[in-house]
Amino acid sequence: MPLGHHLGDGAVGGALPLFGALLAALLVLAWWTSRRMRRAAAATGTVAGTPTEGPGAAVLGRLLPLLPYTTVLVALVLPLAAVIYLVTTTAWSAGEQAVLRRPRPEPARIDGR
Image 1 (cartoon, rainbow, N blue to C red):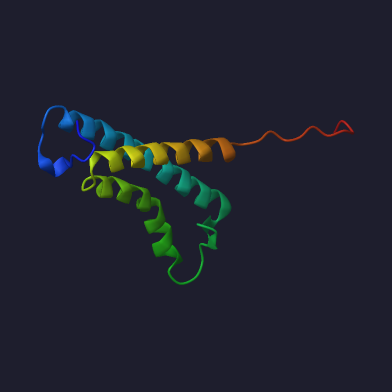
Image 2: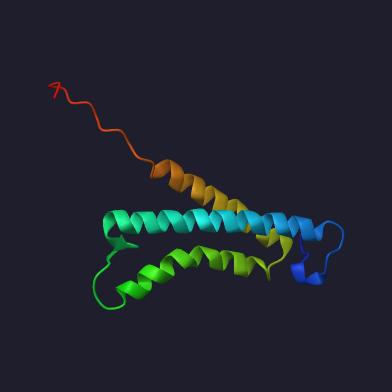
């Protein structure tokens, strides 16, 4: 499969299953990222670091968790090489977030309380 192949070029060879698998991976990653964004906003009372009060905060709170899905829409018009890049970088970023933002245990107190 040539890396310059677009989804719109037709289902030549294994293009359709390959693009389908890559788009499915992007959908799963977008869903996971969106879910983490909603949980973080609910836990901190902020949306992307801004308070959830004030003008436009409600709209921002509804739109930001949907942004990861735009990656899937963009992937529909990009060549195969770019879609592979999107899947790789999105998965890497999701893995980083999972590691860096994992819950940490409370440190043990020295005085035994």
